[in-house]
Image (cartoon, rainbow, N blue to C red; front, side, top):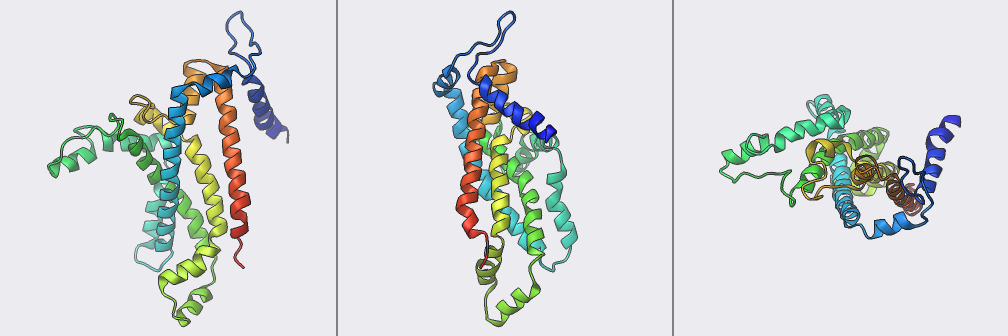
Length: 274
């Protein structure tokens, strides 16, 4: 309880209070400014661009990561040759630090010399600066995240699938159910508790993903790949505007809490198979 209060509850309360103060300077203590930081946030175009980017980022990475994780889990749960190798291969990106993953993909995306450009050149396609083009920078970051997250979510689905009794498949086969019908009518309802857990984690990860941006794009070009947490870092530690950074933190925490509660209250009625 002491650790929880010291490193979670007290900082959260202090951040909320700091969001109503300006940034302390040399010889100037933090002064109470009321809602000024929140007014600045409303009129900040970079903040809203970061919000839009993060919504696109979450809207694509969450369903793609979960769907890919489910497909991989269903595949490696079957009796296939090389199943242990496949499981290890799918899970390997998860154990790599995000900075290492970003460096690997930086090699893929490097103009002219990167792996993707070598493949495109062999096919006679024009060169593409994936991370330097505003139209492709965010998509390139999304691809890295899906590659990283899918293996992590696969582990939870695989663990859930392995708890199912083999008699379920046998009964479905006797009734003449196809593989798709067995998945849709039996496996998917039983996987709903796992899906809820994965979905909540995916939402949180989508709004706290920041480390790979330092290696890949640094939010550029022209803030095309700036995400909310990265902008929060820039405001707080690059521009040293701690009051404004605290206000952004409060908004981010409130949004994530609301999303998590909504998921639990709305989906909780569907996660128990009856």
